[in-house]
Image 1 (tube, rainbow, N blue to C red):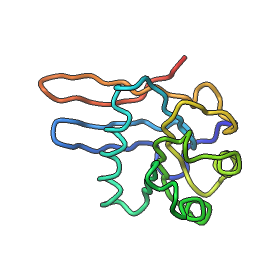
Image 2: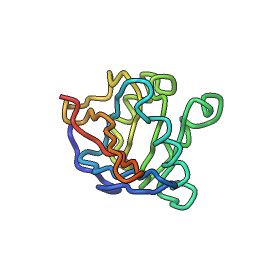
Image 3: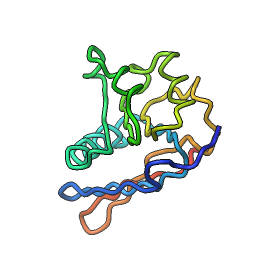
Length: 142
């Protein structure tokens, strides 16, 4: 179920010699990738951005025992970024995200099942280093 982004269509941030530049084409973007490709590093850069930008909320495995489910379900107008989505998202949360018309999501994980995503919504993390600066972008996984 492809829905255009409802919060923002691009997210950018810079951290020392790293830059994140994601073009968001859908309301739910699922990022996959092998271990060591930079997914967790990108999540930490986006967490830093979230500290400055109140429309961004970040969650990861450290939030497993907190009230993150309620916070997500009560959120409105947020870009919600979830690392380790396979750990945090049970079937109920996957259904909520798939049908949520109030928020936008970037999910980082390995299993997009239950999110009603099209192949175009599943992206891979891509990186390019030039002159000592690494830029992370998204590319289609197909």
